[in-house]
Length: 286
Image (cartoon, rainbow, N blue to C red; front, side, top):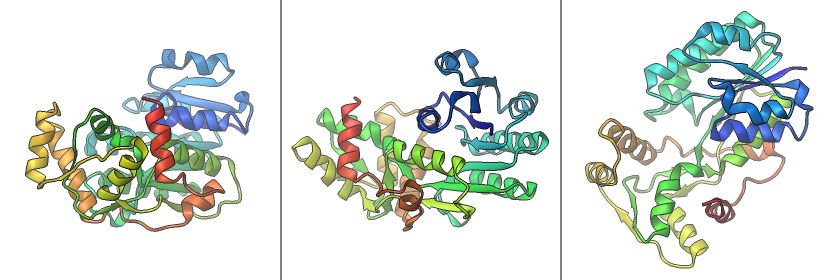
């Protein structure tokens, strides 16, 4: 069996590779990366490092050759870029005769009002159109996405939020990595969609948990969307990114990440890491 993970030198991808190598020999694992020189450590372990650039379809045709089970990790960028890049990967997977595709999607993707949903909707549809057996990992929200706020709180700054009572299924990337590896490896998961959502919390509840972990109160400053944009601009966020960070807050407020599901625990074979424990683990890495 030959498995391949795209984006294997990224934050999520590298964790997934580490989990996979605990279960399969390196000779069965290939990775597709834009810059192979960044994957020298994997190559030294015996992993098959292949050049695959999502902007260059021909490299993906070569990278996916001989692969039976493929994990496509969604790329970064604006929506149009991601749709194009993901489309290249899906077309290359079909051309290569891949037998099974796992794709990291977004919570409740096809019904979501989240501003980041369109690339995932398009990619899920493209994969379905190939007729290839597949699994969509509809990841909720990485706790690591809050790293800037956590670092600010550790330095004494307030936690600024414009999401009001919107709830999020936060979980650490390690949990998502283990879930992805389990689905890629296993034949006994029969579903095509997995809503991977941790226990739901508001930002206020997350701040309360953080306060408990660090042993002092973290002030929560609730503001309007416009004011949130001003705060982010003052913190050095670029004008290009301001609509994105504000849109994420609005997406949380409108409930786009408020997804209740037991899929995460079922795929992990254990409970999702409790929020306080996940915060302790994340802070320990800083």
